[in-house]
Image 1: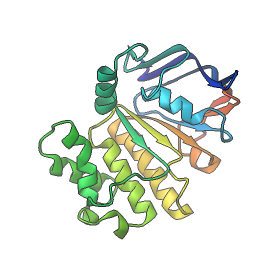
Image 2: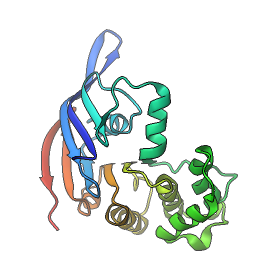
Image 3: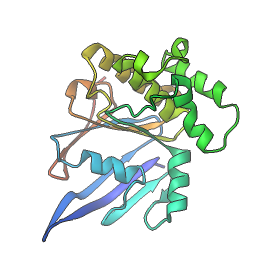
Image 4: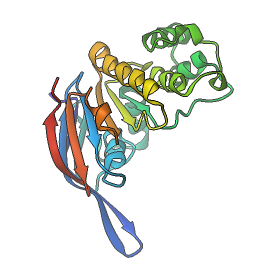
Length: 227
């Protein structure tokens, strides 16, 4: 069974008196441990697709299933539970809290969920992204690449089944971008998370398993990425 299944999804917005289709009949699946890149120009529907996959929004038509469960029609409480337990998010802008250390930022999702032993689990994830030696540093003491690695550790601290990454290397230099992409590959391989990543970078997409090219809200190309 696919971990994430998007079936003939349409997402339509109203722009004044005009209906705009951000997604038009999009279907895709991703298995546990599969790394999928979504490429295409700005406005092609990549971020909209991530929002639907992560239960942040509802489709106008079609079905989104996460871990075998349709998210359509669920209430806010259940959607919040699904996001908290099964989904991790990584953004272009790191969204770290400046008054918290790296470890404290990573701990935050666990604290909000009422979990115990949050420090130990946070340090495990910082070690996975090779930042365990910087656990007590604040965001302003870290480079952009290091901040994004903290953000990845925070996104995976609760062992999500699905990781959504929206332009995760958009603000990074090439060396930092390479490190982040290798770490995302490691998350898929070692933790078994399915990853959907929106990116403008075809170079970054080379490390993924499957490339999906979107154009005007539709899938224009779908192919495996050569090893």
